Length: 236
Image 1 (cartoon, rainbow, N blue to C red):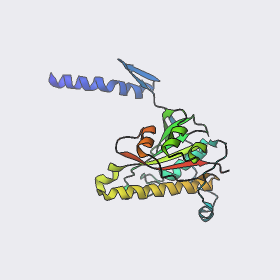
Image 2: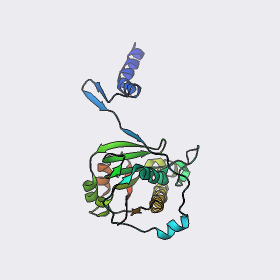
Image 3: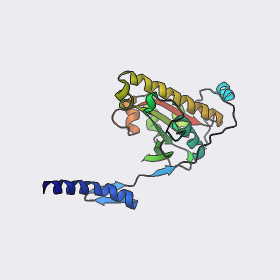
Image 4: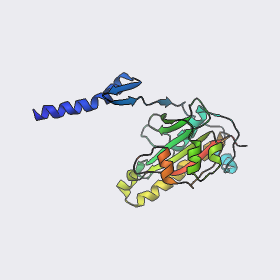
């Protein structure tokens, strides 16, 4: 009897989750709880063959802090996300190396003026190359304040944020794993900046910000910390 009751409780607790995935309903009402549907955007397929030589991109790359008041396309956003953390083969390896292939990085984008994306904060899923809308609205001013009023953030049509989940690496490498996370973030950020240059865009890496404020704005999980903020747009 006790086993039966235990199974019944588990089934009742899981029912709303199962129903959400099976029906795809916009809202699931369970007692007093309303569960909104998570909006997922499938990104355009990234290009893996370019026409701009790597040497030329390295030569031209500069930190760009001022951008034109113009939008960028979801196609460019897709390419930039892939360059930083995209999957490159069937084994799940990515565009940036990772100690032990543990991949502790998470990637977010604040879309302010992106054709094909509503204004809001998105989290990138490397597994299926999609974006999940986590917050609707313009968060550029809040992010600007958290980043000590660095103007590039409020001017750019899109702002990328790279974060790290410490336990993903320290679980294997101990305290030294923290160093590996920062090294990996550097790889991903450089990929993104070089890809931006190859696409005719400007970018700048920002490391000065209030960690807990950025984490709060982006709704990061416990044990996750922001490492880099990277505004991207058409250079003035």
